[in-house]
Length: 61
Length: 542
Image (cartoon, rainbow over all chains, first blue to last red; front, side, top):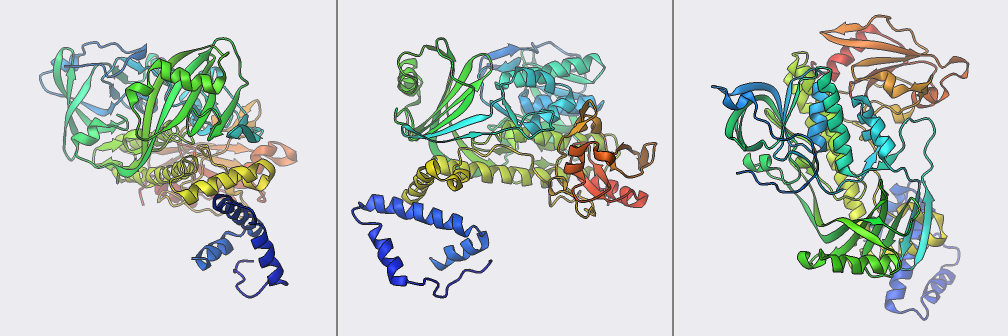
């Protein structure tokens, strides 16, 4: 894989979104920031491919 | 007048008046080296071993007190071995494998750098810089006894230089007054604050890091810690934003506290204040003596060019990095290793002086790599923005439970030799299936060979390393440059690590190896014309 998938890829988008928001429940802003940082690192490692990660960094800008 | 800027650990070359000081006209020398630190001493040693007359000028009479550099990497030890003084360094140095990373009051993870088998030298040793310099100097004395034309002149301070197309005039102050020398070549090894660089009006730009570090070398008198490297991020004992504890020989421990930017240096260096930090870290029941302390700040920067006509800068005078990753003294020794054989060939008339421009090409490439690595470590250790700090701590939190995050923890990436992939001296890489670690531009990895090791057998001249390939028995003479052939057979499972590191999937190979033991070219078999072309390319003749 060397191209970032920007087409819909989540089978249950509402479920994911709800889980993402729920993960922040009860967190202060600082805790949420720290959680987001950890989540990005976990996902980045799963992707692994530097070319894809660079495209993701660009897409998120 | 000459004033000592620092006290000496070892007084090795007391001032002695020499005939040059009373000569009617300035005496001309092939090479003058300025500075008696590790880089200057190694330069004098490298050239002297080639029979090149060299005069080293130092404004002190020996080796400065204080540990400063403590980590010497494998490549440096391999080079020191070639110079003949690797053994005492290895004997004296501390070898460590276990490192622990902490955040606050918890251990994030532990690593064990098991050495790769089949190398004479470990990946690194801890050794106080004064010892490293002393072993170099002792080797200079040993070479002098064998006739190497090396002179080391203490309390000879260079105050001015006049540059000409074919030489440099050097104005020197001594306790007996001034005198003047001429040098065909001048090598400036006078440190990060290089007076020569300033005399020549040359720039030294880069990035300033707004943080100070308090170093204390302490001798434990009651407790022995294990021989491990401990690194704390945001330690619970609040003695610094980060803290490093590292063992050196003689029961000495290096402690390094990151203490912020706006600090009162005199106040922080008071023994009572240093002890306050140390006691918080070690606990009040640990007794120790403070043997040396200092506060440093650092920059990552380099000169635009290292060669300026007949003046060549090497080591910290040419480039400066943060201490994280041990890339200061180690890269300086690689400079020397790169420059030595080139300057030798040029002085002997065996190569054109443009060969020295490749020193710029290769070592600027190396300096940029070192600056990149040390800057990244610095940014991890001392995050400069809130987001950077958040991510740094996210990495540390994850690293405790998730292996994937551990390679992201950067408390310094250890200095590894530079691969000169883009060098103009590189010849062809025609070895299909050849290992990446021995591609053209790499420094040769070691491997066991009989009762000894490969690197020792390669020596420090151009050599053809032939694996399962026929090469001429007698040395080749290529425009006055002798190229010795050295054959190794790996058939029948012999020399398995040589095969692994130099053959890979290939069945035979011929390597052209430079005097600094970097690979200049490689092929599956010997071809006289190809070898001749590659030697000429490696000497900047084509």
